[in-house]
Amino acid sequence: MKYCSECGSEVEYLIPEGDNLKRYVCTRCDNIHYQNPRIIAGCIPILGDKVLLCRRAIEPRYGLWTLPAGFMENNETTEQAATRETWEEARAKVKELTLYGLYSVPHISQVYLLYRGNLVNADFSPGIESLETRLFSEDEIPWDKLAFPVIHQSLTHFFSEYKQGNFTLHTGDILRNKS
Amino acid sequence: MKYCSECGSEVEYLIPEGDNLKRYVCTRCDNIHYQNPRIIAGCIPILGDKVLLCRRAIEPRYGLWTLPAGFMENNETTEQAATRETWEEARAKVKELTLYGLYSVPHISQVYLLYRGNLVNADFSPGIESLETRLFSEDEIPWDKLAFPVIHQSLTHFFSEYKQGNFTLHTGDILRNKS
Image (cartoon, rainbow over all chains, first blue to last red; front, side, top):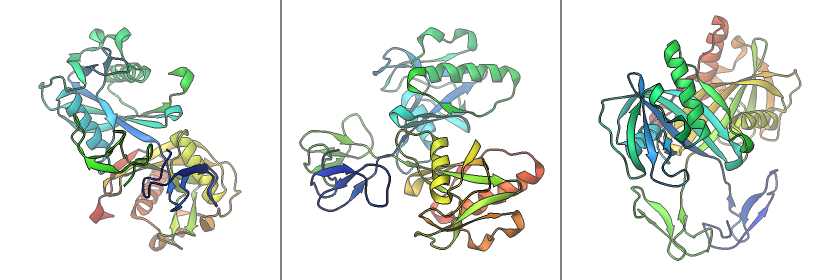
């Protein structure tokens, strides 16, 4: 950030009075421009013993498989965000969403909220950011072609708990050297 | 937002190509300035059968009682944010944090993450945004002087489940007319 988004003047990066962190502060109108983590909302779309994955049509990890997920938008709920991303990336409708994972990714200031959701039907197709969409049972999952460690971890948890018939919320941090 | 924070030129509010929502887009450098929900992280600090509340020294709801909570900062985890807010507002140290509530507040684009946490000891005092800090058992809670409906709801859940000895995650949406 170099300029104030309210008045167009230059900003300085300093600790405002009464604060303890550096902020971008306008040199003319004194506006303080706070920057905060963003939420990635996603879904494990489930049909019977299978889950729906998308093959990425975008970087990073072009061509690898992932769960539908993306940035939460203003004026929506976390469940609406996960439902919308499932629609946008896999043209699939999900219902009965339950929170399944909450992961902080502090080095990129993101928080990942992952839901389990039941597919309304078997209709799905690649959205603009996907090359391919497909249902996978556990033994069909392309484990060595998953886009991100958190996807691998979440699918491992899911199939393990699916067999036990008992799901629990997973929380944790994804740190730079471990991701 | 009126000006581009990267080059200082005016922005337009329009739907970029390939998108489906209006964004602030720079008329000169084409930067797209996305705006996303912010996370409020908070804690129910627990000591035995009591919880620690703060009386607000700031608007809104000046003088009313609340749980320590505030905006999550970049480069921290959700648990670190809840721990930090408990320190800043109540000068209290908490450990063993467990996610207890996730609430979306779409009309103000906020997501509220509430933890249960055990107080490390009985040391606490008002931080700069608090007038007073105090431990309350269930029958001492100032139910008619709580700052926000979500505080009332969370404390009701907490004491009910504390007596049952079984805590569950609470999720939901706080809508304009219901808050």
